[in-house]
Image 1 (cartoon, rainbow, N blue to C red):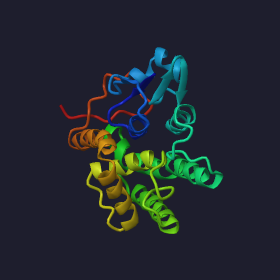
Image 2 (cartoon, rainbow, N blue to C red):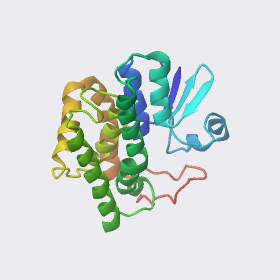
Image 3 (tube, one colour):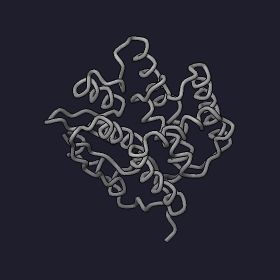
Amino acid sequence: MKIYAVSDGPPSLAVRMALKALDIAHEHVPVDYGKGEHMTEDYAKMNPQKEIPVLDDDGFFLSESNAILQYLCDKYAPDSPLYPKDPKERALVNHRLCFNLSFLYPQISAYVMAPIFFDYERTPMGLKKLHIALAAFETYMSRLGSKFAAGDHLTIADFPLVTSVMCLEGINFNIDQYPLVKAWYANFKQQYPELWAISAVGMAEITEFEKNPPDLSGMEHPIHPIKKVKK
C-alpha cells in the first residue's frame, strides 16, 4: 500500500493518522506541491482531480480523504470502533466527515491556506464565514455532549476535524470563544500524542509558511493565481 501525500495538507495528515491508528503497513510517497507533481499526467492517471492525497492499494487507486478513511476501516478493520457499525453511530461519523468536507474546512482553507499559497486575501467576509462554521461545530459538540466529535470515543471523524483546526493554531487564530471545540482539540492532543505528532509536523510547516510563503513559481498549470513571493 502507498499513500501519495503532502506533509502539511490536512486531508493528507488525516489519512496518515488513520493509517497509524489502524497500524496498517504502508509507504508514504511524498508529493512535492511546490513543483506541481500533483498536476502531472502520471498523477492524473491515479486521480483525474489532481488533488492530494491518493491511496494505492495494490493497484486500486482511491482519492478523496473521506472515502480513503472509510475504505481503510471497511477493508482492514471492519470491527474497529473508529468506524462503528451501529447505523446511528456511523451516521454521526459520516455526518462529521461531510460537515468538515463541505462546511468547516472550506472556510478554514480559504482563510488560512489560500492566502499563504495563492493570491488571496483574508477578508472580513472570510472571517465571518469562518466563525459561522466554528459556531456550528461548537453547537454539535454541545448537543452531543461528548469528548470526541462523533461520540464518547475516537472515530475517523476526529482526524480531519483535528487537522482542520490545526490550521488555525498554525496561524495563532484564537478559538477561546468556542470552549467545547477547544477542549475537544486539547483532549485529542493529550490522549493521542502519537497521532497528534503527525499533525504537529504539518502545523509547524504552516506556521513557517505563514511567515515565509513558499515559492510556487515552478508549478506548471496552477489551479489558482500564484502568490508573488518577495525575493
